[in-house]
Image (tube, rainbow, N blue to C red; front, side):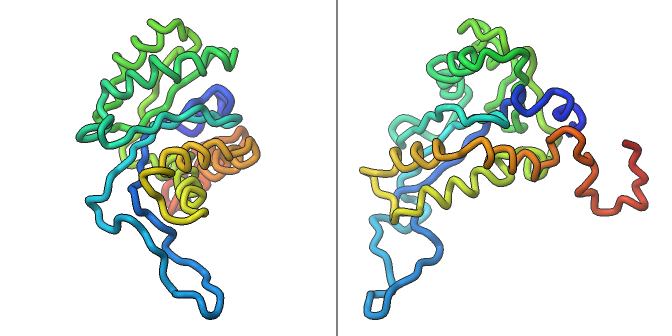
Length: 215
């Protein structure tokens, strides 16, 4: 899989995935000046706090505009229908605007990632630049996806950098944090996943001596 992505080139590979934040989320640690109370006030502290989901995508050169859904919009969770609406309303026109051919869309194996419906939605919107969809091998997203691996972790840190999330600020903070990523940061995450050309595709093999990989 890495070799295939390397041949395509990072500017032509789009990773798409979903993530979330909850109202009341705060950073796991903070620094307080002497005399300040060692706690942060927050509006909600349990796993039942309002959940806001984000669908996001990126290439190795740019992040694409995300879509963020409040609890009333997402219902029980992100579904294939919601994902298709995201493609209709945002993703297809953004991919056309890249003026880059061909484009390959990489997805994990979540049940909402219906390849046939996604490709149909892209083509209905005139996005012929996407020529194929590739599903990542089982249990490989942590090693192969810049989103699942690192970008979403960096994003969560930036979302929380200015204090607790509230119903008033959460969607703006989620969007603003995603849009801060620079091309240099994206390339660093693609490199971390071994996706750049001429990288050793077996660099993270736990036992290269016994596996005897052939490059």
